[in-house]
Amino acid sequence: MKAVDLFSLKGRVALVTGASSGLGMQFAKALADNGAAVALVARRADRLADIKKAIEAAGGRAVAIEADVTDRAAMLRAFDATEAAFGTVTILVNNAGIAQSSKRAIEVTAEEWRKVLSVDLDAVFYNAQEAARRMLAAKQPGAIVNIASVLGFGVSKGVAAYATAKAAVVQVTKALAVELAFKGVRVNAIAPGWFVTEINDKFLAGEAGEALKRAIPAGRFGKDGDLDGALLLLASDAGSYITGATIVVDGGQVVMITG
Ligand SMILES: NC(=O)c1ccc[n+]([C@@H]2O[C@H](COP(=O)([O-])OP(=O)(O)OC[C@H]3O[C@@H](n4cnc5c(N)ncnc54)[C@H](OP(=O)(O)O)[C@@H]3O)[C@@H](O)[C@H]2O)c1
Figure 1 (cartoon, helix red, strand yellow):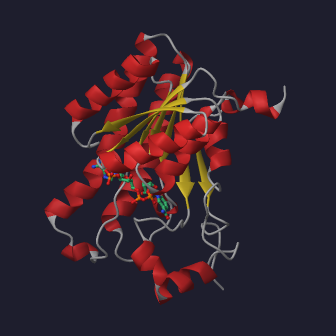
Figure 2 (cartoon, rainbow, N blue to C red):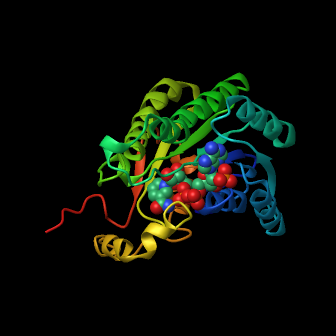
């Protein structure tokens, strides 16, 4: 089969959380460019409206849905609205995420811990659960792609809540995958290295960023498009026998031992 057919998403319906900026915006565009109708979900409606326009101008199909991923009722409405526009969601990209302050673990408050875990882990699970329930009810195969991080494998100082959530995303991906594989629903994750987005642009702009860049074997941060291949593999029939996997896309960062 030709690659263009193997990776085609024609007839698929994707819901991307955190589609208003950064990696989520790029994921939404890549899915739409390859044939999927895409629901763009985030809290900033103005941003979503602009991205919907850009996707449509490029010949794609999109709806913009304002929702907070930690609001389960709002997310149910987002799935309903996507279904009404395009049909059952058959690709979920669980991408919305927040960073934590760089506080040391002993200073992290209960509120901050809960906030980070709510967005970066709880919402990932509940959205995956909802998407899978709907795929099973509609007897449709599907693909769930969770966005983890290299901080799900290793840690630095000041990331206790975030890294814990991302490690759990890797693990919940496996747990969902083994239960859903027989029903045709695949669940995988992508663990990006450093990409300059709103989540980290201030931090990466300074000397800390330069030091981090020097530690990446590829010698650069990730850029737009670097995650498209992994996403399209996991979302399309090209990845039809891949489930429970986490693909690390980090320019070699996570396997590097300094020295
Ligand atoms: N950039 C990196 O280096 C990197 C590396 C590894 C993993 N990641 C992961 O990649 C994902 C995307 O991050 P990014 O780098 O693209 O950062 P970003 O530009 O800050 O994007 C984060 C997205 O999440 C959305 N979001 C945050 N809280 C939300 C909530 N409660 N409800 C709905 N949407 C919410 C934001 O939209 P609204 O504010 O409009 O709601 C935004 O669209 C995150 O899971 C992050 O942990 C990023």
